[in-house]
Image 1 (cartoon, rainbow, N blue to C red):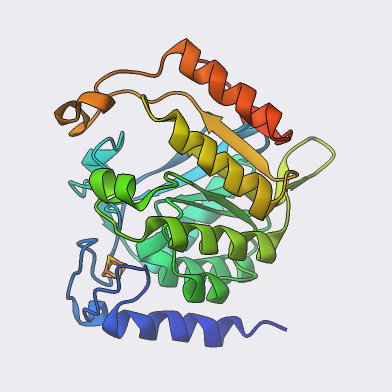
Image 2: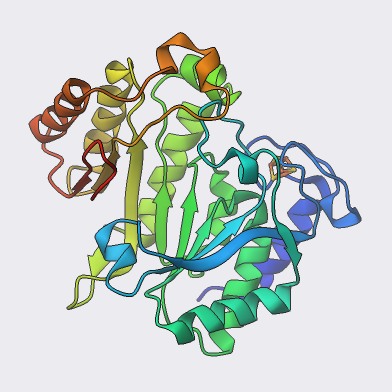
Length: 297
Ligand code: SF4
């Protein structure tokens, strides 16, 4: 049996010397200090709304109840949400109001609560997840993240999170450092994905095809970097197994600082996309979704 209250207490105490993410800044966020993610104990969100553009089992017919947190633990040069993730756009919200917002989204009929960029708020998420269940939230809770996660923190989220939606961005730490400013993304990300799969298993859906529980791994194909994509897919097939649901995303476009990097200064070509899809099929990854270059599922 999971000790939710004990786990929430542990997560909040981790913020005394913050190690909620693998950056391990060790600042006292409970006393208002801020580390790399520019976030203290206060919660800031950029939006709280119905979103219809996620994968079909997530958006379904009535949308996903998306709560977009401000700031991020990464610093990706191509981030398409950088005004929120890197400039910190958003408004403060209390824990109680966040719980009420989750319940209101459920009343609107959404299929799930979708926490986007949640990592630096994992303590708060455990708490609002627990409190909202007590107040009648019955729909699944999603953790929609960059995949740069601390396994020990993920373990404390067990039973709170129903669906993990992590990115797998890189198969090379050299690329991760160059484009996201992290030296150990690959080993940290791979361990995190294994822990997520251990907790929630493969994706399961209800009779209407709506996600109930499990993991969907997302990979955004970068231009000129098909070898990266192939190695990422190899890891999924070998270590997470070929039944894993993969969302292979083709909608890269230049944003943020990407024009400073020649190789990132264009969209994906149709040829690159087709080759990635062919490789996905060749290595036996049969579950999931591919997109067209117009960003349609
Ligand atoms: S959550 Fe923020 S403060 Fe904590 S370790 Fe990560 S970047 Fe640093």
